[in-house]
Image (cartoon, rainbow, N blue to C red; front, side, top):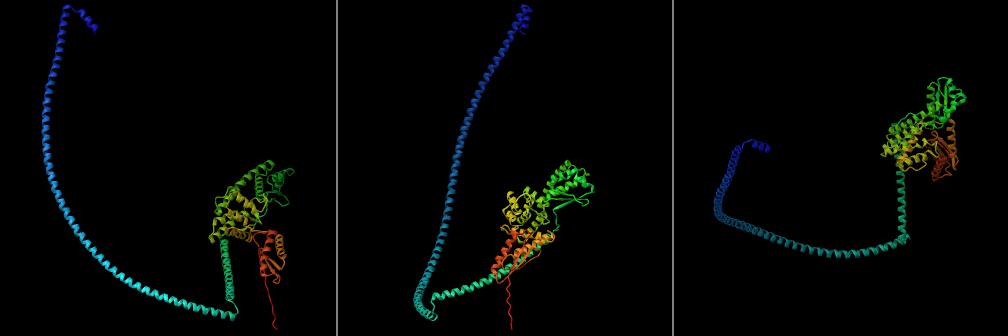
Amino acid sequence: MVHTFSTLLLSVSPDAVGWIVGLGIAVLTLIAGFFIGRYLGIKKGRAVQKKETDERLGNEEQRIAKMQEDAKAAAEATAAALKKEALLEAKEQDLKLRKEFEQESREKKAEIQRMEQRITQKEDALEKKEDSLNRKLEGVEQQKNNLARQEEELHKKEEEVAQQHGMIMQELEKVAQLTKEEAKSILMDNILEEARRDVAVQVRNMEAKVKDEAQMNAKKVISLAIQRCASDHASEITVSSVALPSDDMKARIIGREGRNIRALENATGVELIIDDTPDLVVLSAFDPVRREIARIALEKLIADGGRIQPATIEKTVDKVTQEMDQTIREAGENAMFEVGIFGLHPEIIRLLGRLKYRTSYGQNVYKHSIEVARLAGLMAAELGLDVNLAKRGGLLHDIGKAVDQEQEGTHMQIGADLARKFKENKNVINIIQSHHGDVEPDTIEAILVQAADAISGARPGARRETGSNYVKRLENLEAIASSFNGVTKCYAIQAGREVRVIVDPENVDDEQTRFLARDIAKKIEEELEYPGQIMVNVIRELRVTGTAK
C-alpha cells in the first residue's frame, strides 16, 4: 500500500502535492483536537463527579450519625422500660414463690404432725407387745423348769427300767441257758433263712412268668414277621442244562477232534457233559457264575446258526462275561433297593449280585439274604429296635459265600473280613460273625438275624438234600447224643432240628443235665454240618412206684 501511495505521489504535480499535504495536516489537527477536547471534558466531568460524590458521602455520614444517636436514645428508653417490666415480674414471681413456700410449709407441718401421731401410736403398741412378751417369757421359764423336773424324773425311771431289764435278761439267760448274743444270732439266722426261702420262691415265680411272657412275645413277633414276608421257594441244583434244536448240534459243539468243546471248557472253566440224552447238554461246575456264563454263551452260539469254532467261542465268552458283570451289579443294586438299604460300597454291591448264582442246600443265597433282611427288619420293628441295622446285617450275613470258593475259611470269617475291609459298622460285622453262633452276639439285632436265618432256611421247600444224606445226618446226630455217659435213649425229631435225650435219673442229677445239654450241643457243632439250628432237650424223669397190699 505504501508503495502504491508513493507511486501515486510521484504521478501527481508539486502543487497538488502541497495541497494534499496541507489537507492531511488539517485533518490530523482536527483529529488531535477532538481527542484532546474529549480528554479534557472527561477529566473535568470526573472532577465534578468526585465533588458531588464527596458531598453525598458527607450527607450520608451526617444522616448515619443522626440515626445512631436516635437508635441509642431509643435503646436507652427500651432498656429502661424492659428493666422496669423485669422488676415488676420479679416482684410478682417472688410473691408467688413465697405463697407456694408458705403453702408447702403448712402441708409439711401437717404431715409431720400426722407422722408424730402414728409414731406415738406405734410406740404404744410396741409397749403393749413388750409387756405381752415379758409375760410369755415368764410362762416359758416356768414351763422350762417344769420340763427339767420331768426330765429328771424320766432319767430316774429309765434307770429303774434298765435295772429291771437287766434283772429280767439275767433271769431269761438262766432259764434259756443262752446268752444275749447267742439268742440274737439264732434269731437272725432264722429270719435270714425265712427271707431266703421267700426270695427264692418269688424269683422262681418271676422267672417262670418272664419265660412264659418271653415265649409268647417271641412267637407273636416271629409269626407276624413270617406272615408279612411270605416268599415262594424253589430248590436249585448245581448243574444246568441247555436244550439243543437237534442231535446234529452235538457234533458241532464237540467239533473236529473235540477242539470246540475243549475251547469252551477252557474259556469258561465248566465241564460239558454230552451223553446219550437226546437234544440236551449238561453243564456241571461248582462255581455258579461260571456255569451261568457257559450256559448263556452256549445258547448264543447255538442261536447263531451253529457256526461254532474256537475263535468264535472265545469272543462269545468274553462278551457274555462282560454282560454278566453288568447283570451282577444290577442284581446287587436291586437287592439293596428292594430291602431299603443305601450307602453300600460298590464292591459289596457286586458281591451281593454274585449271590444270585450261589446256592446253599439248594436254596438261592441271593433270595435267602433278601428274605432274612426282611424278616429281621420286621421283627426289629415289632420290638422297637434299629430296623436299618437289622436289615443291613440280614442282607450281608452270607456275603462271604460270594467268594468262599476262592478263599480259605468259613463264610462267616470271610464275610466279616470283607465287611471290615469296606468299612462296615462294627455291629454289622458282629452280625455276620455270630449268625451261626460262632461268636457271641453283641446286639439284639444280631439275635434277630440268627432267628431270621433259621426261619428262612427251615421253611418247607426252602432247602433240600438227598434221602441218604438226610438219614445219615440223623444217624450221626443220635450217635453223638448217645455217646455221653448217663444217656439211655435219644431221638432225632422235627426233621433233625431237635434232639430229645433221656438220661438215667439215678446217675445224672439236675445240675448235670444242664452241663450235658451244653456238651452235646457243642459236640454237634464241632462234628456235624447242618442248616439252621438244632435244639438239644435233655429230659430227666424220676418215677417211684409203691404197691399197697
